[in-house]
Length: 594
Image (cartoon, rainbow, N blue to C red; front, side, top):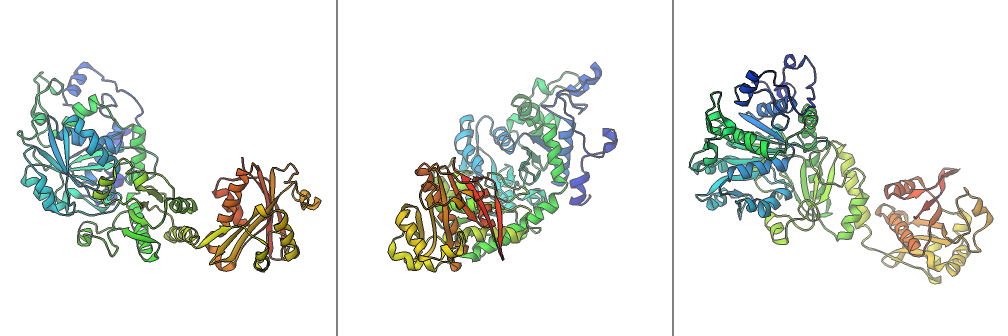
């Protein structure tokens, strides 16, 4: 058999069968000509596997199914419109006429919510184990109505590893299949079938496709498990839909004794419920598979580096990743994941909700949205988003604390990703000891010591100038204090006040005398505190205060890094006038607050 890296590109496709197209063609059609009545009869009785209608089969989708089958060392696969469709079809098909699934108590939020509240409406009961790390805990929950054991190979969001081989033996001992959601690991990092898994599920949206541009799901059947008639009678019921060429009704097991499960899914679930994967999305996922090895390998490396940075950073309360010091089942990670440990990790944010929001807003190289396995690095606060459906007791059982933050590492530079985290942490936590306040005459000596660079040096350093501003515009004086000492300030004045000169009005042409504008005279932070985000805090406070006072514009002279700040916060600014005095470069500009 060919190597994984060959199969990811070549498996399931023969260009001679597709007009010698180098790339897999997109068969964007609803239906296919039957050719003749004889051919139609052969197709309808499954003697010919040609496509009929894209809801139940399409050549582009078939290539994806065959490629995943070969990458998984499996018997067959069914591609669907989403990962949740793959999960739903699997659970509902196995538990027809009543039955239960024994499952890990720490799963992807959509899985957990559907297991707890949705599937039971259809007679499918889910029994969550108390200790997901202990194989014996799964066996303890198995009874005569159990129809499978369900786990994630690498759990989402906490990157936990479970003993697949032991769980497979327990499942087979009780004549039920082991179902493994292998979405995070992908077939590149882990082949669950090698260790006894019977059904493998993927959200192809994630690392299989890898580019955040297509939604899809895949169910893989190993072909090793034998579904008994006593437990899975639905696979032995004859149906008119499965008649042979002579018109005899057959059961899924009659059609394919190796995988009646897949026959059942395609003939009934895909036919009657739908959830078909579109050929275009199948094509996009196939494109993603071409680079899965390089992508997942780099994502795993980045995730591990980020996890170890967080572990030593002092900024977080805990880190979950298979290689950190506190990780459970490290020996299992080494056993099952020799190529890497996956691209997701989680950590406990040691701060308030407001600080978490500020932290996320200060990140530049992490996208804040709910997906994983993307080429872009992603971050999300799980308890408020991906697992928001779970109540506090479920979150606790799943090991998902209220302060859980998940990272899905992308393909960016690990140095940049770590710098971005360090910078955001420093800006947020560096402000904890800084108090924003006003100022009075007694503060003038301290204020005068700061080197104010956002106004002319002579005037800014003048104690008299500060005294004048403080007396006349005290409501627009904001200082940052650390242990009682002033370490930063911003001061402004409405543009209809006497202190504004004609020179200021002419500077860049951005200011007016309508009283709706503010001109910033001074903005400075002590050098020892400039890395702590105090300038951002001062500006944000001034903007908030200005909006509350009905101001519509702020005009100022600033450095280039502040322009970046305004852009990152979505603030619209008007034209910029650039000035160079010696080594100093400054920009005259104004910000619209509407």
